[in-house]
Amino acid sequence: MATILLEVATPDKGEVYKNDINMLITRSICGELGILPKHANLLTALIPHVMRIKEGGGEVQLFVSGGFMEVTPEKITVLADAAETPDDIDVERAKSAYQRANERVTTFKSAPKSHDDIDIDRAEAALARAKARLLVKGVPIP
Ligand code: ATP
Image (cartoon, rainbow, N blue to C red; front, side, top):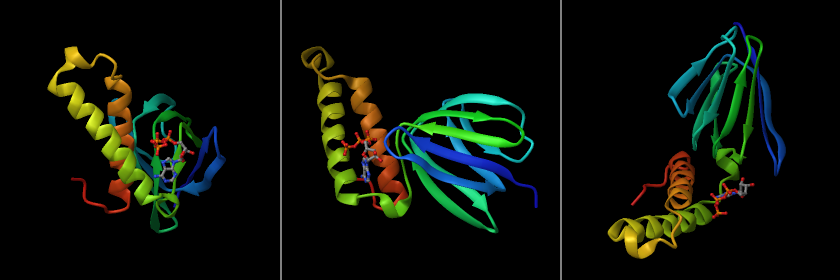
């Protein structure tokens, strides 16, 4: 079966994943993308989500918090802000992050003009990261 090299790296951890894979299912700012070997050149930004990596007859999941992806016919390079395997995700930390962000978003939306101290874009991004982390761990989101 044809393969394409996938490399995922983050500023904190350096390389977090490198392997020849059969397919990557990922979520960009333009929607879901399925990347197969010999894909056309592409450069896009990623949103917080769980990547599905098909390799060697199985599937691996990898959370990425956003970043950039460059695709050539032979190689996929992902430079993510943060990335974790499901085993690496600390559920209690993700739950706390979810609660903090959810509270900020709810407070802001209840009265935006009285809460201009809240950076809503930042809070919504934190909420999306926490949701994606909890999703990959199978934790129900309240
Ligand atoms: P928090 O508010 O808990 O820091 P965050 O979404 O703001 O969450 P990030 O900025 O995405 O955190 O990540 C900062 C670093 O912490 C990265 O190296 C990331 O891999 C790690 N990290 C963040 N949350 C978790 C988690 N729940 N489990 C494991 N590692 C995490």
